[in-house]
Length: 439
Image (cartoon, rainbow, N blue to C red; front, side):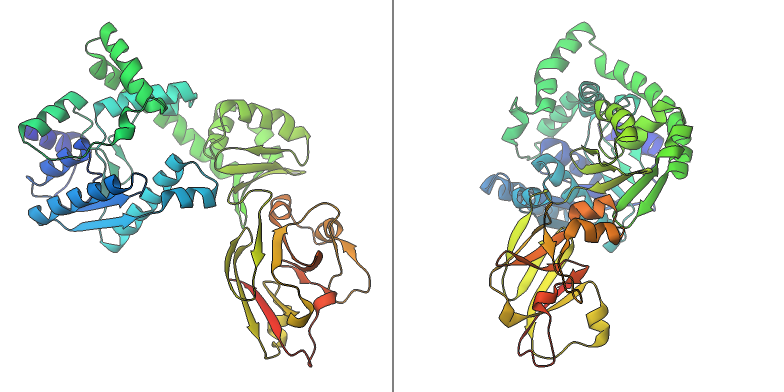
């Protein structure tokens, strides 16, 4: 297998002597085989292991195996532990999605800090087939039917030439130690169902299924490359980066009649085919219509679609004490008590608020604004609807949906990031000042 591995590295991965790799090693049989194979070759590499803390002591045992193996082989080892469950709940994302995001974000950091230029993962030929079948079930289109690419930017998959059976045979023959993840046998995951139920049936129809599929996937990949070239030009014309996320002008979208390109654009934000159809019907005609994917929210404004990452639920609220640091849809909020009167520059900064401490009832409540909310903006005699204030300030729909208010005893004392209330204004004789700052 070593000879086939080396051939694949040179002919398909096109690995060069000057390349410096980061190997993603979980402790499972696939990645431990990849580690063993690389340890017999002259290429420079380091190892990264992510402990997702999802399987208790088993997760720690995975990390210990990889660490011990690297110590024996004298290979630089890096480990990172995440509270994946908590991270997912805070981000409003599924466990699998947040785990993938955390994993690859950390890998990117390591590549930069360790001066490495390639990331190697241990996907094999069976993974390649399962991914394409899973994408077929999900309805991802031609881009998903190509399966897993051997080279995708700086990410390489050196084991794609080998089947799972070949990987297992090599591991057993070399007496390589590895860890079993019990979740890999659970039928509740779609991939496992495909692996254990669907693929064996397909192999009964075609004993050379992996080879046949790989040839088909290469054709899909070539077709996809052509479409992607057209898509990049299209995206450059219609998609614009905004402070809150992205915007797409409706008139530009209507000029481009190729639905395949339009679908691919919204698919980049995790919208499925059915939702894209709704966006193009309801979204074009209904201002204020909202569409959600697992990770993004799209809002139909008058002349454009506005897209932003979903970070917090619409009913977000949290109690605020006299001091501390809080994660909010508006950003990180720092709260403290000060005695010195703020400078005129600080008072003009909308990201800061200075409130009379003695006029507040703690704990304060930080929540999303609601229809019917009123407050008395600083400098005004009467009150005003928050909705009217936001309209007058020409606040965009995505920003409106994320707008927070700070409440003391059912009275809004700060329209976060915009204006404090007249009711809690400070003066030169104010003894204690509550300072709030978005940092």
